[in-house]
Length: 146
Image (cartoon, helix red, strand yellow):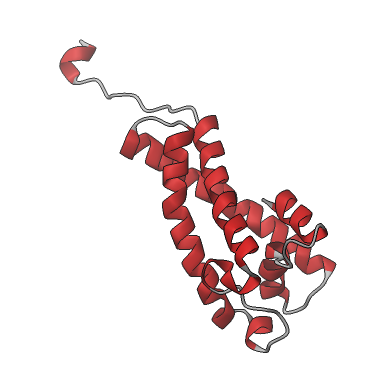
C-alpha cells in the first residue's frame, strides 16, 4: 500500500500520505522521523490485521483463498473507512488545521483517493487470502485416538 500510495502522490493522483498522518500523530510534527514512525506503525498494524484475517480463516471459514480474503477485506474496509473519519478529531495537526483530515473513507482527498482506498484494501485482503495456508485441524475424539 505504501508503494502504490507513494506512486499515486508522485503522479499527482493524490496528496494523501498515510505514513505521515500516522507518524505525525505520534510526534506532533511533520518530519522524516514522523514518516518513518508512521511507516513502521502501518506495517505493524497491517501485520496484526493479517492475524485477524487468519483467525477468521481458521475459525469462521476453515479455508482461505483470494475471494474469501477479499470478502474479509470488505469488513476491514468498512472499519478503516470509519476510523479515517474519526482521525481528524484525534490528530493534533488535523485539529489545528495544519493537515487535512481524511474524512470518512478518505473522501476529503477526492474521489481518486477514495477509490484507491477501497481498491487497496480489497487487494490486501485478496493477497492475504491467497497466501494464507490454513492449519486448521479437526480435533480427534478420545475414541479416535485409541
